[in-house]
Length: 171
Image (cartoon, rainbow, N blue to C red; front, side, top):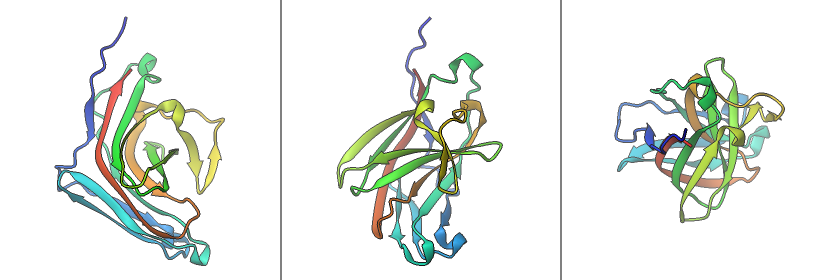
């Protein structure tokens, strides 16, 4: 039995009340700073990564309402699509589950070029404070509670990632 591909919005950028939370390396003494603005039905993640004081990352995340409960057999069939315009740097798409476990999937951007990227559960690796645990289980759709972006590419300087859409579908 084949499920038809039906794409659905995971993050609604027209929702001006949604709260995006910034977490930068200042929590560990670093000096990076960032901002996330929703404008024209897209989000713009901007800032400066500083390597001073053992810094080097900036991140943003928000809660997501997973509106569809999937039977267990569908857990390996979900996909997340992001439509972005980047700056040539490497970022992470990050997911967190109800237990507080964080999963990351790295992606490279092309400067000033629109890209559509697709991620499956298998693209994500459990991550904790910069360490990865690839042997651990992959994220389960029904458990996801936050989505976000992080830059930690060990390069100091300005960054900008425009996120035009975040959608999901079953394959």
